[in-house]
Length: 193
Image (cartoon, rainbow, N blue to C red; front, side, top):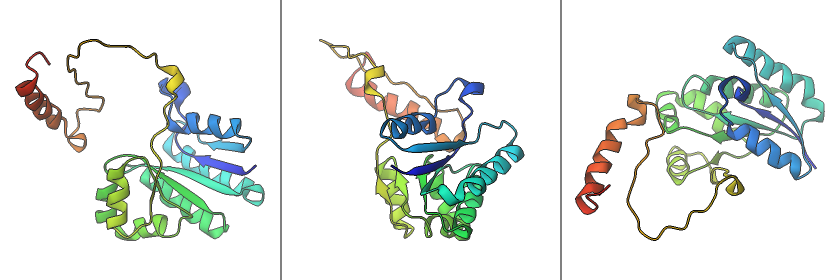
């Protein structure tokens, strides 16, 4: 049994979206671990203060800190918390999220080294992120995203009709035009798509 502090955006009450942080925390509790989560503060400044306070307040009894790490603004939460963990000699694991992280590795080399070179482990949910991090010199382990299979009903299909669903924002960092290009290619072979 480990005492774990899990740092990330726990805004599910506000957004109605259940983040990985909630799913993984519940699974870890079910396995017998003690979990403390930060933060559910909506204001970004208050959120980082809450994250820092949670790590500092619990550091004597914390075995490990998990840090949800994204490529956008939340990258700086990971940077700050990683340095707090280093100062307090607490091992931490960045859990990598977001396709923009490889850009961070290129554009924020020093900050990236401060986070990822000093971590206990770096965890990637995809081979894409694992490969990009290893190219940048950071040892990274692959653990696929958590999906509660029991939450989804199996539907036996006799015939198949390809359908694509784009589940990202229409922002250039997610390359939404790629979805149109993929659909074009699929239609060449499956006109009913």
